Amino acid sequence: MKKITLIILGLVAGMLTTQAKTLTDTARTATEPRITPRIDLYNIPSEHRLAPQNPAKSLKALGGGWVAGKGHGYLRLGQRMIQANKFFNLGGEVIDITTAGVHITELYGEYGLGNNLEVSLYFPLFFRSTLNSIRFEQSGRVQPGDEVNSIGDINVGIKYALIKNKPFVLSASLILGIPSGVVGGGNTQLLQTGDGEFNQMLRLDVGYSFSPFYLTAGIGFNNRTQDFSDEIHANFEIGVTYKKLIAMIKAGTVQSLNNGEAAAAVTGIFSNNTEFISAGPEIAWLFNKNFGFSGGVAFAFAGQNILAAPAYNAGFFVKF
Image (cartoon, rainbow, N blue to C red; front, side):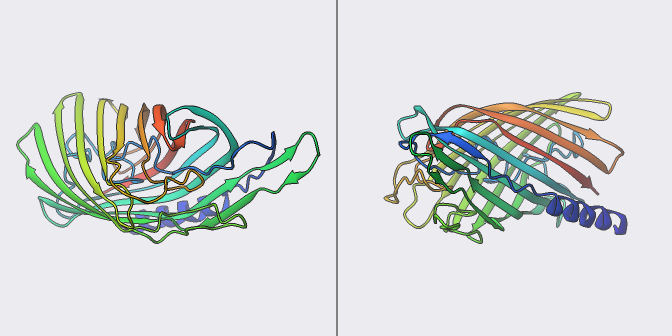
């Protein structure tokens, strides 16, 4: 455990010191809207908004419907990034926007309290949101860029295994979203690292393994407060293992129930009534039985109040 702790502390220090401060000039017209992204886009979460799935635990403990087991766990330190100058508006049309960026250094962990019970934590350790500056072609006037750097919204979860019959598993989860991020940050007061509302998600996840393949799928109901609309979350994943490599295709969607009166503020990161359908590949590589690397990209094929650009993630993990 001492080696694992030193590895995690080293990765945290390395990623925090290498955060790029990117505010570049982009030529735009005066009619362009300044829009910041909602950061959960295309993430296809297995547990909640931001927490990535943990596919590289082994075929018998793959996340999704699987539970870690008493005394066993998983930690992943990763980086998530999106840079976009296109946006799906409220009508689902793609429009031009001021280039916006989100960079998140994130820690995700699971730990088994019993053979059927595990707890999870998602902690955005360093959350950087930016808007690029704008130079107007006619007047030459420059509208300054903006940035905010903080932690993001923390999520904690608990999962219970309802069925553990091999090769089929079924589990139920409760995930709580804690509004620990910043709302209305930066000089423009447009940038956010959280949505300011306490949300609760109930999920059911199933898994089925038939070596060397596995399937997992989940559906959840996300109850949002502060008059935000509730949401339905769903995801599907298929993967194959070959020696130390796991290759996956993930697909997912978030659909709003449109039952909240909060403004659908396209200038906010966590807008009301946000929707998307996305899919993309991911791989995981095990350096040894306890340590590895995973990374992937997700693309949105349709959306509403969300960025129209690929979302990238990469990170190192340990399992024990």
